[in-house]
Length: 135
Image (cartoon, rainbow, N blue to C red; front, side, top):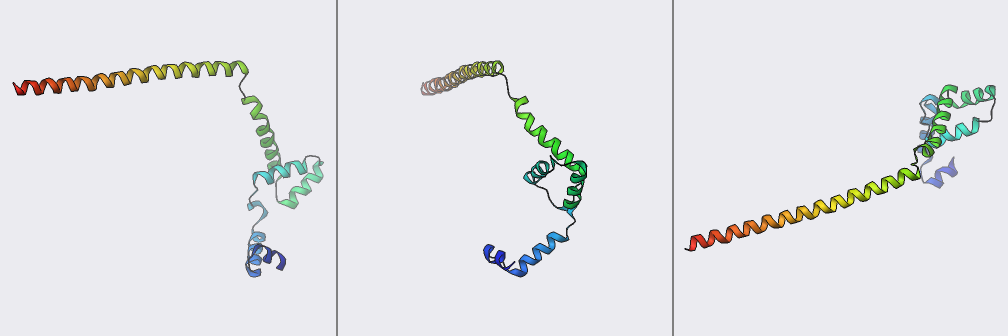
């Protein structure tokens, strides 16, 4: 414990308190991170039911929970292939994007032209208003 305390730069009493807090938590409440769940699934994959049940008791995990983790991992690994678009769909998407970009450029030009005409019409109105006042 002293070596670990020196390595991480924490007092021994603090390290012992952290350890006691962690051990006082029931195994059911300990957080299982995604990598830890995946590791548990891999570790127990080749075990028979009795050995897997013993492993679950030792680590505070229900066998049903371990099965849900396995299904989630399998689903996560299967999703990317199923979600991937076909080459034909990708080609259609690219074509649609090009059409939309072309339409957007056309509308931006029309908007710029309309704004320029509006500014010019205001300037013309202001010029004629000033000429009317001068006369």
